[in-house]
Length: 200
Image (cartoon, rainbow, N blue to C red; front, side):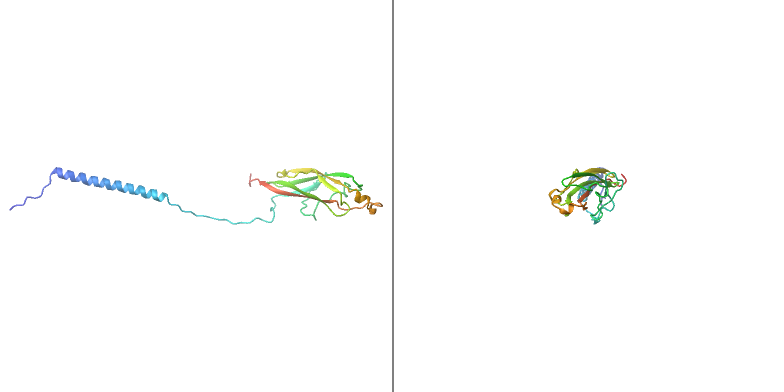
């Protein structure tokens, strides 16, 4: 008995090729979809790296600015940062020498911002009359709080001193010679409101 070899027709072979090609295309399309899904998932992942810096401020402005003062027509400027270093005026230039009860006299004062970068706002602490000869007198100024000084800018104002009346009239020590004493204290504070950027 003779066995006839299994033969396939051309049509059958073409059909098999078409099926293989279809399966391969489907597999590639599936892989592409899977890849897109993986990419979308990874894009949703997040990760952070944080840094935190610490620091501290100095006990003063570090030379950023200085408020200086002068009196009258003087070109002498002083830092006068404490009451011990206060700018004294009055008797030496005869502004308040030999006053009589109730008399008023004035002086011109100047403040300047010694800075190349900082703008400051000036505030006047209420004038203090010392206990002594001028107790009962009055100190007033034309200075208005909130004066703004830009770098290297100057402002001027007037201070008026009024001598006491009753206290002097009832003081026997004032009958023979001129008596000298401190009138009171003026104090001004500068607060930095802005600083020009370095190199600007």
